[in-house]
Length: 124
Length: 383
Image 1 (tube, each protein chain N blue to C red):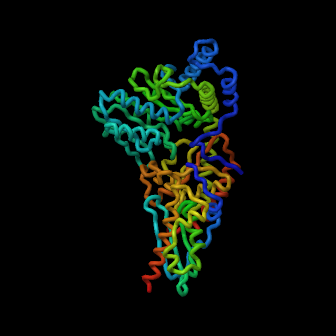
Image 2: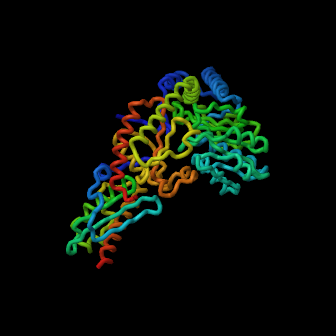
Image 3: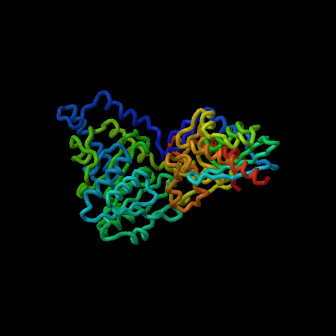
């Protein structure tokens, strides 16, 4: 199967931003895609009403890694309220498009972020 | 450095084959169905090609039907034999590790009302005759088991199964696309009724293959037209490619011993170095009874498509059975059939070596792999 990833996808795949474990965090979530088996973990650190820091781990394809990476860039410094409304279409646009069968990767990334925020909020 | 380790997908055309093919594009281009001298020259050559191939596979030249490749041959045989013989029964057995070009036609036959069952395989990746013995019925008309599996390289006991099928009056087909030159195909000794081959898997041109069809058995043609191939497959004879396939088959068998030794040594060396330098790896499929060009390796806790893409940026071409690499997002059916756990299904890479593979390329591949695996494991959430 041909996979024509954009240069930006490849850049984020080869040099993912905000990757790695966070030792002290305020919210955490692990999400998996039951269809393809990919997994993502997100850690967030919150200061005031803003996401001060975000990190992620990935078991997934190039697109899984790249979509999570670019999303962390976007939401770092964003208010919790805005982050909750974050639209996965923005990721696809920003990456210069994704192969059709890879669009679900961006949905998984956003899902993971929202679950990490839920976790933060549930901790009060 | 560019390294091609995807020879089970396709191979580079042998230059000597290309030279043989050339005159049939621009000089000797007559249609083998024409009765003028140019056509007749082509027709004579066509017969010669069939004779030469028949000698190599110990079959009858009149049973060789040239096609556009393995997929067409498999479609032709599965559907053609089933539809023409449904008066005898509608039960068909197909191994669970067949290529999609057998599995999809089998699914289509199921929709048409045939009773199609998949033969399970053991954890080594082999179909067992005892299993088939349990599954056959009086109305079984056809069994299809590949000679060599394309993903894990396991060599199936087709001689045994074919003999058993013949004894029980069941037709037997084998997709032998991955078998050359690792097995000496012997139609008569094996008791095979139908067999499929594809030239580009053994350094021949793409777009040409053959269906070996025992013409005493009824078969419904799938592509009809000008009556070529005894009316079994219409379409102008693709002579340059047929000449190329014949030459490629001749060369690969002539150079077989040296070739097999080479890929065996190199794949052993590749596995030895991977094991030495990378933790948490395992071979998928039986490590012994497989073609020496194939090495299918599990790299635990990281995803196959990511490994493939990372290697690809370093110039290395491999393949993966991971769900992420498939259009339908389904993980390899072969790896499922041999019983891999769900969480291991997407962590596999197939290295398939070929006659142009060098030791330097293997060394380069291992050094890249070490970095790739280290990088991807540095951020996997899986413990």
